[in-house]
Image 1 (cartoon, one colour):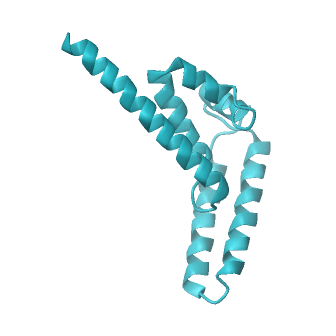
Image 2 (cartoon, one colour; image 1 turned 135 degrees about the horizontal axis):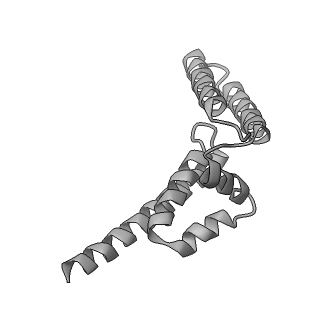
Length: 128
């Protein structure tokens, strides 16, 4: 009896965490400091273990679905996706750096974060 309750609680917790990571991914689409795709990949993995309905919803999403399908199948991303992500990082971080034009420490921090993000994006395997 308790194992059934544990499974239900576990699934509910995984679904809640999945939605939490989707929210972070959406916020990351608007803010340059948070990455979007890693949060959605985590949500995809959580939904794969807890909710086939939500898992399929992410895979069928018009914006993120193709990237997530490729990640799930091959653990790779396309070079085109890397270029798009890099472009977005450069543009959004440049805007942020321009906004903080009087604070060199914040500008340097933003440049450092952008470099780290670009480094990690380009380390991801590309589809063959």
